Structure formats: C-alpha cells, structure tokens
Image: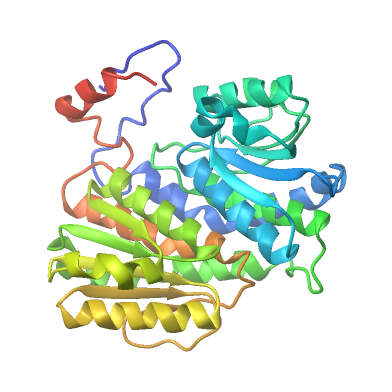
Amino acid sequence: MIELPGPDEPSPPVGRTRHPYHAHEMIRRQAVAVQGTMAAAVEAAARIPPPPAEGRLLFTGMGTSFHAAVAGAWAVRELAPGRDAEAFAAFDLVAHPSVLAGVGTAVVFSAEGETALTLAAMRAMRERGIRQVLVTARERSRSVDLADHFLVSRYAEETSWMHTVSYTAALGATVRLLETWFPPAEPLAADAVPDALTSALATEPFLLDRMDDLTSRDRVVLLGGGPAEATAREGALKLREGAGRFAAAVGVEEFLHGVLPSVTERTEVIAAAGTPLERTRAATALAAAGLVGAHTLLIDTSGGAAGEGVLSLPALPAYAGPIVQVVPIQLLAYWLGVNDGRNPDVMGLDDPRYLAARRSFGI
C-alpha cells in the first residue's frame, strides 16, 4: 500500500500488479468517452455565452490540464484568426497577476476540480471580475463553485494517476465549446473524432511490435508545433509519468536548430503533425535524427499517406488533431512502463525514494 501525505491526497490506484493496469482501461475507453462528452457538450456549450470581442481570452490549468489549455488557445487561433487567446499555467497567474490584465474570459481546466494552484488562480480571477468557464470531469468540486459556467467531460473520471481519458475528453468538450463560440465553415461531424480515436487505438499492435527496440532507448524527444505543441507536451509528460523515461518536448524548428546535436542512437524521436507543412518539416527533422542513429515515429492527422515509421490517422482539422495524436504516445508510455516492470498507474510512488521526494513538497 502506498502512503501519501495529507488528508486531501487522492486514494492511490492500488490493487493491480500486472497488465492490464487501470491506465490501459482508461486509454482504451477514450473513443466512447470522447463521443459521449462531445455529444453532451453541444447542448451545454449553447448555454454559455461567447466571450466579448474586446477582452483577452485566457486558457489555464496545471500539468495535463495546462496542456489542454495550450490546445484550447491554439484552437481559438485556428477558428478565430486574430482573436487574442493565450495559455498560461495556473501557477503563473498566481505568481504574476499582471498577466490577468485585460482578460475578459478564462477557460479553466481541472479534471477533479481540486488542484490547489488552479483554485488559487480561479480565486484571483474572481476577485478581478473575470468570467470563468470550467472544463472538468466532476459536477461537484471547489472549482465548480468558483466558475461562472462549466462543461463536464462525461465518462472521464480516472482510476489511474496517468491521466489519459480526462485529457482527451476535456479537449473534445472544448472543441465543441469553441465551435459554438467561433463557428467554422464546416463543423466537425459527430463521428469524426470518435472514429479517429478508434483508429488511433488500433495502432496498439504496431506499437507493441516496436517495444524491443524502444526499450533500449534511454531518452525521448517529442516534436510538435501549432496545435500539435500540446501533443508534444502531453506526450512527454505521459512518458515521464507512466514509463519513467526522460522525455523532452520541443518545436520542430527548435529541434533542427539546436536539439539535434544532443540526439544519439539511444534516442527515440516522435513527431506529431496536423497540417501538410507540419508533416513536411517533421519528416525532415525525423530524417535528420535517423542519420545519427535515432529511432523515429511520425503521428499524422493531416491526411497524408502512411509509410515506414508513419502512423497516418484519419484527417482532422488542425484544432482537433491533439485529441487523437496523443493516443499512440499514451500507449507507448503504458507499454514501456509495463516492459520495464513499472506500474504505470502510480507515477513511481511505489518506490520509497520517489515517495519521500513527493512528501517533501506535498500536493
């Protein structure tokens, strides 16, 4: 049994000592959860007034929820070019309240609605009269009490600390909200994202075939620009949490202009692309990495063709791509962890050293 500090610490996902761990069930649930969430969000979003044109639009959260915020801000840029939309971690809003100047509406992400720094940021925004829309997996929480409006990501409560389904469901709800606020010429079809998620989940056998080679890689670099920046950030976090691997997230051009010299034959480089230009530049970066011996993988939602080392998933608008691109990385993180003898559910806290480190700072 894992002991954790503080009465507010969530119950650990114990009880499983082999595959399937809870995380695997959460990953496999995503197509159904996102489908249900997006369907419910259409009606719920219609009741949330759009943000006034004159105020800044801010997205915030912590950890995985911050990566959802990054995806949300990029979605606004895609759906409403010229609209001022930014993403900041909740900690930065608390530490640097000047960031809140001119903000009219904030979209806040918190799966359980009880993250301490997110609550502090919400209180600071409430004091300034900033309207807050919360995207969450729970209908009752302290965050719900502070929000002016909330969207619930259905079927997305986690039984693993390697948060997966709560992330993709939150993105699905956000896409429907933003399509309501900033209607695209062609809204996403009801089955577009769930079908693409089903295809992404079907890549599991392909990824398992690569496990022997991947297990020997001691570092992972994830590449993504535009909306796929969120995929790179979240994918790196899942690899750290679930597999205990050192993983870094960088932009494609940053990789080519500064990170490439640190790549070796023991590096895995994974790129996500949501547009044809992103795919072209990602392919260039991966080819360069391959020349120095790195193992590479491209995850594409731009509609390009499949190929060697390429997972070509169903085409989606760039603003919806992050919902789907992350799934193969979640599966990689899970299976790398399992192959290394880790429990992907508990973020390393079954090791007394990491438990002691966690206790040094609490929640």
